[in-house]
Length: 401
Image (cartoon, rainbow, N blue to C red):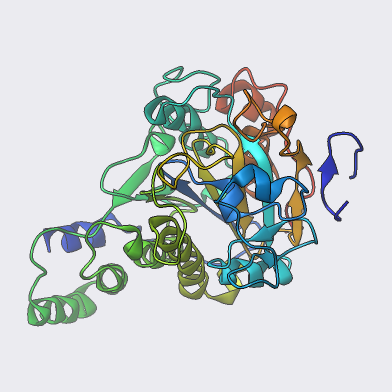
């Protein structure tokens, strides 16, 4: 049994540019040990966790996946081995490097409390933080922001930012947050921007710095339209907000296109493209933050549910239950796979078709908020994730501040 794994049977431990500039906070910022950052990536469409993090050491892996199995490590196109039992998809070379540097934790066989197969309901529950779809009208991350300690709140105008076309439910609520996405309007003339920056530099140095930061974020997103190929640019833009003077300490970035009902395999499949984009996005974020800020940052990449274990009739997989989540960052106590592994034999599967859930995503969320961001555990139980006493925070996921 690999180190870090818990077996079920044996416990082992333009106008848009101007608006962006005006939205940036304008107070001085200085790094302190409690000044941490959290970024949540919502993988919309249901990522196939057994393709992203294959359990190549399970004796039933190849037969259960029935044409979807990632080859074993050492074979052409094989998994990147992590601990002798689990691996990463070969598209995730950057994450594999983070694992080797003990900056990545893979959480497997995990799911929200949702047990049906509607994208809309599952995403709503994932974001509202209650045990039921549409159980609450605001998001768990916004509610958590209200419980940040004073050292984390600082003098920030906005505590969170959504790098998205619209505010995701996860960040909606009473705590002050903002959103940003690449402008669809024609870009302002470069000369106009230069003259405006010169004017601000002479009259208002703080506003000049804000405009410069917004210009950089916009430049990183030039040419962005739809598609996962643009995800690294969104993550780079998030880094600009998280390192802006007195900028937000929390961000949410959306990644779409993970619904792989057909043509899931192959180097040029949508899944492989998405995984490469996710991998490049994490690296773009780390580069944009810089080593110091990255050392105090954690990234949660989560999806609404997993996918069926076996391949369907169109070379893909259908809506499932448990899957995998990634926790990565310089603040993460990584180099581990956490899994109460249920097995992939037919009798082990949930409803005879899905990876059986043995871990609750809320345990991961609670750990990030309690141990990384300093939110009181009693508040997490009472307000942020009501009716979740069975999902205890996972201990030991973060380095000491």
